[in-house]
Image: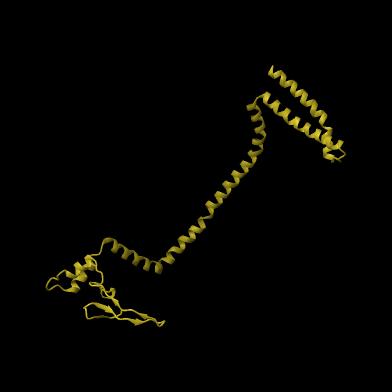
Length: 209
């Protein structure tokens, strides 16, 4: 820190100086009662100050006090020290004892794995066998839940859709567009679908009367 001087008025003043760029720094007056940061005392907590001010007992041996503080360790600290000691001693004699148990564990491990594999394969096979039966029973269950009139109505709508597709194919053929073999085969089925629609509509009308 820059050293201050006391002028003729009794004020502390920092003398002027030259900056690195050649300019002159003016002298600066230090405010009365100001203590520079370097001269300020180091902060100490109340506890630290209290410990410094505690008078020592006459005739007290400092080594005896240190031994007393060491013997006053908590139970947790003692347990931690014992645990660390066991860990330090464990790897030296525990490897040979642990080897047979690890090998026996490895030998016994495949049994649960094999049982789990067999159980999963049996469950998969039973699921695969039950899937076709469930798929076959689904339409019958749906038909029973809907009722005969709803089933007839759904069949009529499906056949009507096919007839409309055939009519669109007729329109394309009339316009000179060539149809594929599948489309021509579909056109040949249109009269039968129309007759089936009439029959289903007749049955539905009887149910609704």
